[in-house]
Amino acid sequence: MAVADQHKIGSGFGFRSTAAEVIDGIDLTGRLAIVTGGYSGIGFETTKALTAAGAFVVVPARRPETAAEALADLSSVEVAPLDLGDLPSVKAFADSFLASGRSIDLLINSAGVMACPETRVGPGWEAQFATNHLGHYALVNRLWPALRPGARVVAVSSGAHRYSAMRWDDVMFTGDDYDRWAAYGQSKTANSLFAVELDRLARESGIRAYSLHPGGIRTPLQRHMSHEEMVGFGLVDEDGNPILDRFKTPEQGAATQVWAATSPQLADLGGVYLEDCDVAELRTSDDITAKGVYPYAVDPDEAARLWTLSAELTGVNALT
Ligand SMILES: NC(=O)c1ccc[n+]([C@@H]2O[C@H](COP(=O)([O-])OP(=O)(O)OC[C@H]3O[C@@H](n4cnc5c(N)ncnc54)[C@H](OP(=O)(O)O)[C@@H]3O)[C@@H](O)[C@H]2O)c1
Image 1 (cartoon, rainbow, N blue to C red):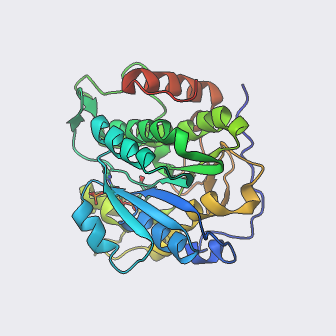
Image 2: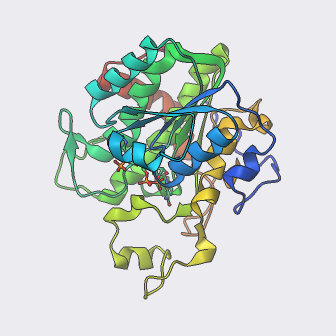
């Protein structure tokens, strides 16, 4: 199968566009969104933009009290417990949501962990793959009956997918070769591949999926990065000052996922990887400042293989 149509569409938005700008003029009154991680970093800015446009937003959180505090000034928000690294917790959240009888218009998978020390969850799974990908895979499949025709699912990937394609011979890093950036990279490749296969499977039900790189944004996500790494990645100077032309503000960082979830410009597209509020080109350079998506992260065969593996591991599969 061929790689999806990864070409810019000329959206008119760009690197510095904000969530408020891309959603301007879009009325989400009566719409329901779920935003994982919707109380921190770019997830918080996403919740803010969606509620300002009239949506009701459910924010699943592994720390519900902290989430409720962070969201206290927003109306039309509901917090519910969810730990993406714990499949029974994912099931409990989904069962409770389904029992409420509500439908979902927008499902934005923004939660994630980055470059943590080797951590095992569930049956010994590598925590970044399990949290960033498998938890969201199970969540979307369990919530499938509530996704309304016309709904969109948005998988927040990262330019860090460049650190690893799928490691089919050892997805869970079972040897002594754990590399926290390779593990993050694989999990972000998985986010992108998930959108490719979900879009293929869900399209005929009127449901589309997208993945994206939000940009580089200072958030609690960088909690596991050392000063040397921040300098090495070109994120801060030796004194710890952010290198501003490489960074987006959180409002700018939320823009691409808000655009993915709401823009009419994407009505006839799906399964594509986005950045800077446009469809990304295929990546042709390994330079750290290069943009675009590596072909392995949008390859339909890789995507189908990941779906099969994810279904086997989680025991959930609503679509095939
Ligand atoms: N910031 C960047 O520069 C950047 C760049 C590329 C991609 N991204 C992607 O953007 C997304 C959002 O990142 P961010 O910068 O907004 O980070 P953030 O502020 O740390 O937000 C991440 C959210 O995910 C939640 N989370 C982590 N583990 C979870 C679990 N097991 N169950 C449920 N929720 C969990 C966190 O909850 P806690 O508060 O409890 O930890 C937090 O609410 C991530 O998927 C990340 O990979 C970010």
